[in-house]
Image (cartoon, rainbow over all chains, first blue to last red; front, side, top):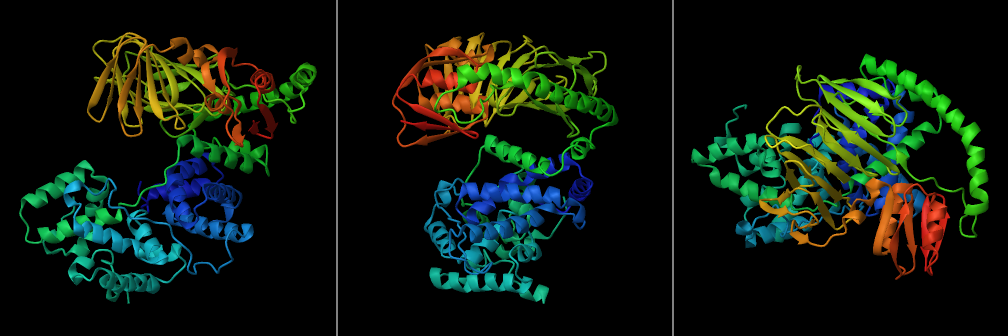
Length: 203
Length: 412
């Protein structure tokens, strides 16, 4: 469920490099669902996402000997899937060609009716929160997704999105401003999403 | 558990905390116990924490798209084909490198047998089968070579993650798991022989069938299990606890060995079937709209989320996506378990229902062109027919069935 940097991942990766098919199978079945969910948010075409995952794992096998050692596999796979999907999109010309990472959509709909929100807290504040979250830009949504669904840290998010750490934090900061205007509510309750927006820690 | 000073945490801090996320997102017993205790200490910043929980829940309200296990398996099959395309031979052997040494030896022997078997198939059987099929199987609509029916194929996943491909492994003792002997019998059967004198630790194994595969398994307690295509069962190599627990996917038929002291419990997708000793079938394919449990003999208890129903022989319980349990009487038992006896059996079944079964057994994708045909079918045909022979039967009504590559295309 979680992507953590572990000895297990390290060993699995070594095993893959040595040509062990079981290692590839383990990586595939462990990460498939997460890759699929993330891929579908980038492009809403199930077959295309499945094809991209298929290509990704065939490449993983074909090029296995040349890989660097890594201790956390998930971010690596997410990076590869993301760029694979954009390549496929350009090939298929399903959308006008755009430079990687420039203003693409990120499909992520927050819903007050979801199971996570129980009836008692189905308040006006919840509605406002959900509404405000839905107003975030595609890139901000992607940051939130990678942080809370993939549970990546900000450094990893920056790598996956091909941005610098600084720009990831800027995205969060700008999101905070945007939300303030949208919600017109107090700053403290907004700290929420952009909690980690404490750039001083990273300067 | 590490002791961070949560009493000075702000809403923002909580949102970045792993243990907090673990509680709100997964509600794991460990994290829930910790946070309940923390709340009961009446901290001054309880409000900040509640606020963080509310915000995190709003974030986590995003719905997942969801995907079925059989689709995941399908993509994996395609990957394996893609991997084997450039380099045959050497790579094939390497795939077993992770297995323990006894397994490695038996599998390299099996691999040699496999090569010989494949060659034998190619030289001896192939010409005969084409000769046999050409006059009978050729119709205007069948464009490709005929598709063979499924057979006894399965993969066994051992406790250490190693895999044994059962259709190619030779008959006899495959190895030992936690003091239990694994014996592969002929004709697609695997038996677990527990050594009662040496109860070792509990190890879990998993048997799974691909599309076009079926397999029979005898568990350590003598319970017999039949797996239909695209199905799996996870089970312990010996039953040492108070309950006999297994979990499944797809379609599985059970003949549970009676043991009043140890109930046998099958879990599938949030639903549980508890029995003492009885015969029943569970169909939990992800392309069906409900999990159907059909009882042949004895009695079973079907439960989900606290709701439970006791089934009598001849009854079927259906648990839908929302968890509603409904009971149907007057079920045609023969029809439900026809697959296990080597037949397709339908009663007033539409094309879609039939194709769901065919696609899994012949490993074909199904495409409807235009509206779905309204014809319904009643009858019983053996599962060992080639695809073309079976499609001919279906074409007696006003549908056209074309085979292109691995797709069956249905035209009205």
